[in-house]
Length: 334
Image 1 (cartoon, one colour):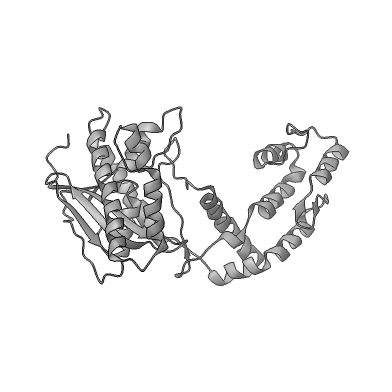
Image 2 (image 1 turned 60 degrees about the vertical axis):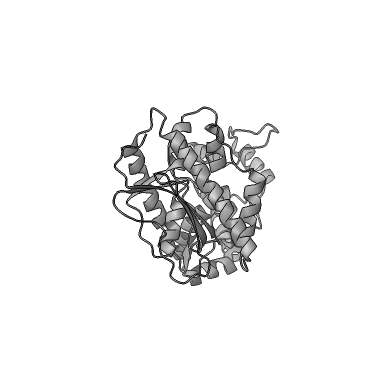
């Protein structure tokens, strides 16, 4: 059980609209206070200067699942961040990351692991679709959305009650991880500054840039246009009498790790390795700058087995890499 050091234990969930590289747009918030049993809803969309519906004292504990989203909404609303945070997503990851069987860590996944009844994924997806569809929200829509949000809150409350009975659950350590989730929210809120003019220039001229890079670097004539031709590369390997790892179909492997290993043996293909990564790996069209000329992505903390940050969506991960490498390339070209 929780020690009586907290005046209030708030289970909190926001619903919001999230657009690429933009701040979240809060739609509503629901909280449940465990000690009193009180549950309260607050509609936020297009409301003028709403205030937190709960106290924010030093002895108040806030609990949420993937709480960086909640604290991001706090930042958008100019609400202070809570002093004490425990994140059930993070704690579930710590419970399950060591498992040989990789499992999801959504609220539904965590509740299922603890034997808690929840709404169905179909119901959850339908509610999210309505939220993301945006305004106008009728009175019926508002009731539907806040009822859905409340179901998440009550499920999280039950999940938290069961988590704290696990012998390995340690409140000070959980609070320490909760501090990090507030930092994650600030990182996602701030984003990465983008030179939007340079990004637009790169996007408009990327095909020309690729052709110029290929002309200057591909001394072995592997490329045709902007395409890496496997037959040309196969012939190059044969002419040089190199032993090269093969696929099951007998073609030379051309993945990143193979090229990295083989470039250590044959340094002369190092520039070709870098060229292939640039030409084949970058897609500037997918990089988006927000309305404030900042690019944002989900940090997805504690996502890996070792507890590292890792965007859960491969496209997000790729975009983040493209943003870093691509803008460096742009400055070099300029």
